[in-house]
Image (tube, rainbow, N blue to C red; front, side):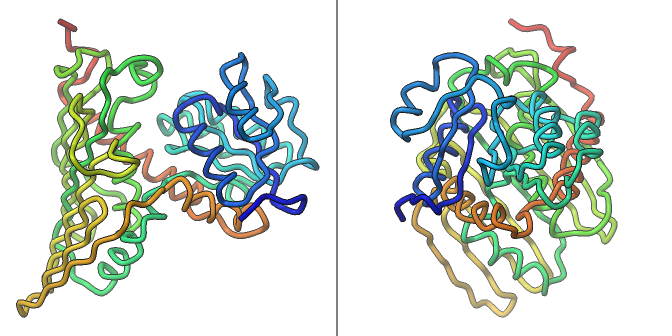
Length: 328
């Protein structure tokens, strides 16, 4: 769909970053009019020219009457204050996940005007075509356990990812699985075991985290999340992210691995469904365009906050915290 004068008007904050540029191009592809890119230096010039957008240095130059949605894609610690200001000024906002680096940071947003109605948190897994099928299957099953392996390809752990305040891999990558799995079950899970390591890159943050939690209804949740210097043969986000979610139930088993879904029934029946590669940013943009014209957020502040609180708990329980590791 080609953007017209009537297309939703979108601004992207942090547009020169990896996620910001993906958001900007995705919204343009979805039919939005990407009118403004916010970058404090000249890094966004080429993208602004590509999209025909105006480049401005600050969100102070944004005006609610000129925009239908503001997308915020910045380091996690920077986002709550900026999003709270935008909400208080009347904007609808899509913020990159997580909602904050920790629950303390999220408190800044909690008091913002319209946080439950005008803020959508960008958890892209919800927009994968497998997600609805797995969610529907789980609702009718007696689930015993969920096991997740989430691996993001990174040649180096540096820049904002190496800032201890950002929380490390569990907050930057593993939080996707934490949020999705916690959306399936009620109550606050109890952390049974958790460990963290920064031995692979020697950065000052947790690079590898493995945790076991138990939801009140007895469902066990095991998660392994790490950054990897090795590119895997298949994965989401153009191969940069390899994800496996294995759900075991009394009635059967479902295995979601990147763009494939395999289900085994207790009576021996099984089926496999394979999806074409999904541009999760594009799918999310299409959903966000409905949100910015009055729809409900695909992922609410309350739902995202719960995931952040669970991440806080599993990191607090990890005995090998990154700051205790001496870099080689």
